[in-house]
Image (cartoon, rainbow, N blue to C red):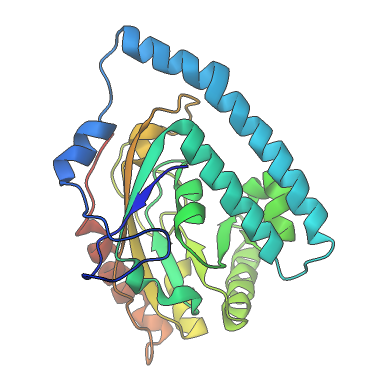
Amino acid sequence: MARSRSRAKPQEKVWFEFDRIMPDPSIISEATASPRRGPHETLSYLRSILITNNLIYLYTAFMGSLSLAGSLFDSRGHWQHWCARTWSRLILATSRIEVYVEGLEHAGGGSPTIFCVNHQSSMDIPVLLAHLPFQFRFVAKRSLFRYPFMGWHMRRSGYIAVGRDRPGEARKSVDDAAGKIREGYPVVIFPEGGRSRDGEFLPFKSGAFHLAILAGVPITPVTLNGTMAVLRPDSVHIRPGTVEMVVHPPIPTAGLTRDGASALSTRVRNQMLSRFRKIT
């Protein structure tokens, strides 16, 4: 399994293992930097295509089937989320991706909040599922719900589809997400609305911030570093490497109106950028 490390106070335990010291940032940068072309890169590509990817397809079919079967008996999605976490841990372990976690004490232990996360790779989702240690739901674009197994799992688990083409659907998605949060579940949103192709932050969409104000819950920014280096957008080559997940202190929304969404977006973005390192 992929190991996780967290910066914590002396003699304090975190959910996944005892205290570890975060690595120097240069270690992560070097470990995840794009390798030079050559025999090593060719072998890495072949291993990914012939072994890693095929195992991931197998995990997806098997855990997706378990998730769907279990959803017949668990309408709250707890079983489905366990299947998704197990699927994610298998992917990270098979891909030889090590994840360092900092600031998990800010995550709220599953209390209602909106996690805003930068989005640079399809590997972001397994990292979040494996290392946020409580039930949560994704708000995701509707096209993801069309994929076999993954899409079926997302729908049966209560994840929220965002329809961006029609304003009415987008508003309904925000209302549905607010209702889900009021039921007690944290929600994860990628405020950029899609994956970055160049490693830079994309402009933030306003939906996450209107949602936080509507639901009356805080926003917890999360910065991911290194996921693009292990799996680039539109690529099937999964490289071993190191990823860092930084959970920032939550930002309250109490007393804000919809007019405050833009200022809230700027504050969240600045918090995420404060720990962001472009590693491609």
